Image (cartoon, rainbow, N blue to C red; front, side):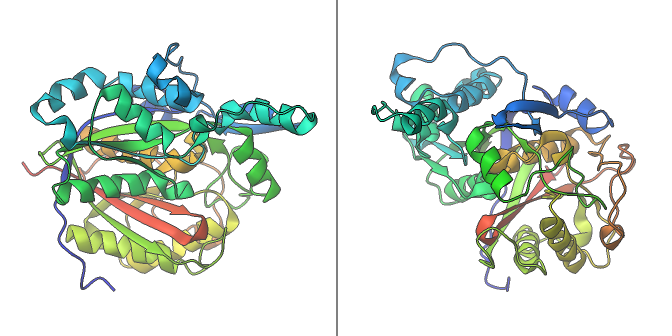
Length: 398
């Protein structure tokens, strides 16, 4: 299954930034992930007649968008620009050494700017008078192109939208672009913001939790939706934390359900290990996809047991803190793995509720203190249709 995988060179995370319910910087993120305090909030405006728990960011977003970006203007774009502003100076300084034609943008999203068109569409459905809908802002390719225009770059720019694996797949695509020598630096990541479309969609699937979700919990009953932006500048140069490899699979078991035995998930993890030339025992921390739905959690733990059968890898899901950020999930969770590897003093807590007996025999992170340094962290992202990906991050060699 993994014998013919090509060698892939690691790429460096030169700069990174993230926004989510965890806060707006690494210090706030660490505090949130190492405490038992709830970071989700309740909203009444997303589903008619129902209050739901969501992972909402309270960060003030940029207030102005230039005229040349007006066609793509949306909360999603402003969310991205707010995150980018935190590392924009460093990125512009760093990339002056490269031709603009060698600077690329790859972004994962599943919602784009649909939330901004929802009020217009509502009026359209309620009355016969045609409404003017600005389609550009909700087109999937809009975000990457807008960020390219904003930065003034001229290399490849495209969006990946594969539901909940979007951002992780964008990072894998960026690594391939650098390895193929088609770019010298890539702005990569994922951005998704709260909108009625996704909340009502998951509600129709009866997949929303009635409270704060409990991944692998005995009483888990579904997910909480969240929003996040995670952006990284990747290049071939070494950095304190490197993106080592990715492993991808497509099990195509069901349109919205994973293979019940976790075959695709296990294949993705095994491929990532093989490409990075690592053994399962080398992984010091595993960030689970951990959505808190009965099927997803059960299949993922089966996959973990397949790959880490003789190991006691520390693992946790962080979605009870961020909500499921859909197309941005892989980005915020990659940022979490990066911060763990940079700091070397903590791991994200799994939730403290009762665990499902069938899933309890794992080394869940129940105390945040990291006493033994780790070199490698893995992050899982699994999506509708069986679109699976695992990323491995590692500290640079001394």
